[in-house]
Image (tube, rainbow over all chains, first blue to last red; front, side, top):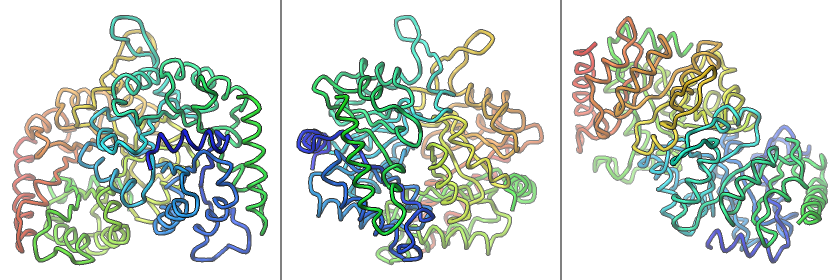
Length: 275
Length: 275
């Protein structure tokens, strides 16, 4: 599967810009799953099966699996998505960043071990730290640009000198570097938080049709209307709008997956109302 | 174990600023370990047992374990270091970086699951992305500042406006933020590559006695004399100078651990010659 092709097909065929984030927190699982050794897999599998026709991609957050010693369950979950919901891209949210030789090991972890279709990567260490991921031309490489958290401004909002004169924000420099240089294989995307719609619009202006992964609606307070208006591409797609907790924990008992489906449907439709 | 106290004790008692990096690459293991299911653990354990009295800390690089599906062997290795070589700090080189709720999961992974004494963290997402690690006041939080790779300059060497006027490089801003703000519990350190001794000196000037983790000697070409001259603190310590491949793969057959010990001894002594 080629990530960019699969994402575009999912946008069209499922009429959805919704990305469901898989952040399994056992403390919030329904009672009937508590204490089961495969609870992480079973919880996520139920969410996936209930929502796959409503999403353009799934985004498992590896930290939640690693904290639970549940790497094997993450492998099984991604394999399940590929088998049961073919054509649904899986973004491994790992935010890796390291020098080339080590980044090569992280690329093996993401793309060969977990069989993810895309990975999130931190740009702080520069181009050669990203090249080992870019070398997998059929995989997506999603660089952090303007993150949704308050501290994102500590570095990303600093003004840096622009070659040729003037200044730009650090996140704008990252957007330009990726769009103008790192994206030679056409497999790059960017993370821009829903909490900053002005910056989503700026990144859209700098990057043409590049896909944007947008976390921060729901629990973090980002606004759907403003996000879509600022970030959609010319054909009304271009966005992976992530929701995690508001969907995963929409219900608290045995029918949690049905509640998650209703929340996913509502979110997809709310997004589509503004496209 | 309190990371900063243990590190200072190790500097003094072992008369060493050497950090041995544990980057296990099965393709480079000696023949007698090839194909063994516990080869990653056995290789690293032999290196650790042969060099523990010569180091101020060990630094396992988690990507090498994750690419091999060897998380259990990493857990066993760190447990082995704590039991057999008490007082030897373990730095988990993970370069994590995410919003607070997710960073909390990474902190659980590093400090509770793996029982590491310190972790490397990427500063791009700002202070609130680092706070979950800082909350473990007895653990070390080692922020990327000026990394050893060529692409490190892409962002870290950009000039940003200084509050109050003038400009500074982005890595200098990171060093100041950490020294002046994030280090309230005294548990922070910084990563500065040996390939940039001028910047090591600048970071030392900005951060007082803060410990610096310095990768990049050996295979990456950093110079020991320049690193020590630029980075040592007033008492001749202050540095964790990392060497990985030059020590791990000093020998290629059954006596690889003895060869690693000789390489570690030579490196420690070469460092000490310039203190």
